[in-house]
Image (cartoon, rainbow, N blue to C red):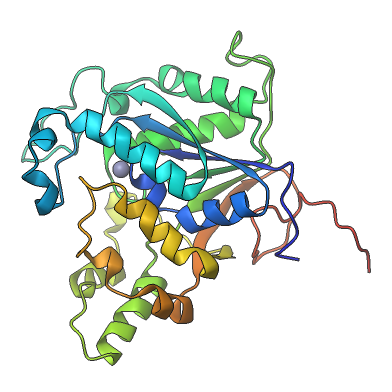
Length: 303
Ligand SMILES: [Zn+2]
């Protein structure tokens, strides 16, 4: 059933910054494109307040002169590797605030906007593109960057309101998406499995501290929610292609980083899936799932 062509289906992935699409759910997008679905990535900000995280690129003059321009080109390159359609939503990057006390977010940046203003261009896009499935972050934003949390809010608004004829008048014909998933790509079960394979191969694991943080119980006062995986998508054939997309974000991704600590062939043996939480659904489905389109595909055979 998993090889059923996905012709006629549309998936919209809502991300905060360029590179997020390639580190969260990239294999899934490649897979559904290869099955015939249309996949659209919407990037809410330009990522212009990010740092250059790849030392080799930091020395290039362009990196200090025009980071925003570099990231536009990197995103186009990544979209080619993924085979997806792409839209810039072009809000201002909020940056990751640091310090004690935390400085306020830059005036007018994505994270500061009221939901009606932040969601409006995504509502318009959803009414135009008509996605069946939305890929989003959970309330924690995956990690608590203000632009990721705002991306979550915007995705929920699209799921709940894009189909409401009373909401957001003038932004197109109402369209109701059928399912919404939270990305769970950096889940502790997967990191644990990768970590143990690295140790078994006699190497040092870059995941030790990360895992310790993830596996310690969250402070109950933090409001941090945890989820269980409901949906695993097999992306085994697409792991190399996923890595090429991620490496296209040269300013952000060091090719020596933990992302590439486990070779693709080994990942295929250990964790060939990408993991999601089915957070909302207007169609009937049964959990666990191995297909984002479960409940949407018209089954050609009946028992
Ligand atoms: Zn991001």
